Amino acid sequence: MKEFKVLIIGAGPGGISMAAEARAAGICKEDVMVFDKASEHSYVIRSLYPEKKMVTANFKGIKAVCHGAMCLPDTDKEGTISYMDKVIESAGINVQYNEEVQKVKAIGNSIDPLFEIQTSSGKYRSMIVIVAIGVFGKPNKPSYTLPIQLRKKIHFDVNSFQAENENILVVGGGDSASEYAQYLAEFGNRLSLSYRRDSLLRMNPVNKESALLLEENDQLEILWSSNINEISVLENGKPVVHFEEDKYATKEYDRVVYALGGSTPENFLSTIGIEFVEKALEVDDNHEAKIKGLFVAGDLASGKKGGSIVAAFNSSRVVMSHICYSYIECYKKDERLKFDYHTLHFIDSEGKENLDV
Ligand SMILES: Cc1cc2nc3c(=O)[nH]c(=O)nc-3n(C[C@H](O)[C@H](O)[C@H](O)COP(=O)(O)OP(=O)(O)OC[C@H]3O[C@@H](n4cnc5c(N)ncnc54)[C@H](O)[C@@H]3O)c2cc1C
Image 1 (cartoon, rainbow, N blue to C red):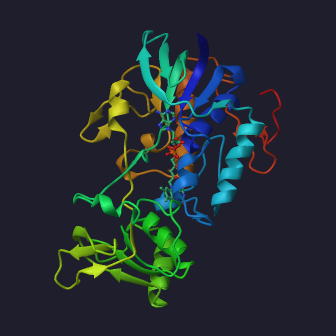
Image 2: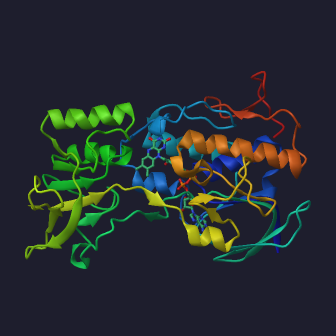
Image 3: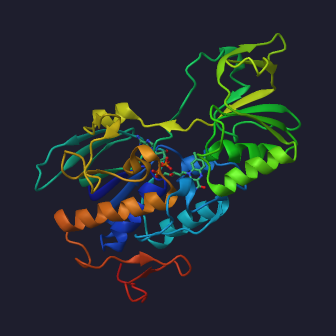
């Protein structure tokens, strides 16, 4: 059975930065393995971000100050994916794609942790396991039932369909809702945004301004303080949206796109021994679960407030520092390396390239 020192579940920003941290801590590449159930890394970014989306480093107002090996300035979707590609290559990160982790069983003790990991293709052992599976496994759905006949007209992302000159209702009030509207407006679609509040408090300033600009240019109608209570199907196969508020008439659209965020894959987490207490994951400040040697990184480490790419990178530094402190002898006890964004090499605290890793 193959054995690793550090095994990471998920190859998104959390998982890749976790592997980069392990490499920056001097752990050799054969001892670090990342598994992802998708066929490529950054699956969520590839599948949920609209093309040409601006990727803001201070997403959701989370400060974009990087503490760890990886860092990203404001860029676009392609720039983000290409940065991750380069880190994987330059840092020598092993990623096993199309392999879903199904079970993690602790077989060690609190001083010498050891885990047995069952994937869709085999069994492995690892001293440390980090779960970085994000929160977008399942997109949040509305509480009312969506008619099955509308499955090709109701969406939870903007990459699974193509629409031009259509009437589309976007539901939600966060950054994704604004980004979906901006993307769909580029194809001449006429957009409405249904949001239950009377101001766009949850959007970052760029997305808020963009949404309000679309409204000003008559490309977007914002249905403030609106709540949908039903969606039915017309004979022509289109969705009809019924609102709770009398001021909004029942209306036919070509499509409805939900941007309601995602929900943590609770079942998987509780199966592997990470429990929820009052809707928050039961992990300590180092993102370590009650089972020693088992950690979370990325969005799972951000808690209820939600995460960002830079927050995911930073969470991996916290986890790695604790691993070096408690379990694995790392490169230098008090000094961690950074991954230089421009030269794509690890550098030390004085900015000198370090080629030992
Ligand atoms: C539409 C949208 C726009 C956003 N815009 C921004 C932005 O502009 N700036 C920003 O900083 N942040 C943005 N975010 C947030 C950012 O994408 C997340 O914070 C980030 O992706 C979290 O990284 P992660 O690694 O924790 O999880 P994810 O990116 O969700 O990655 C999890 C990975 O785990 C894999 N996985 C899941 N289960 C298993 C399993 N059992 N076995 C193996 N693999 C598994 C998945 O395939 C996936 O690749 C946005 C999010 C969305 C949805």
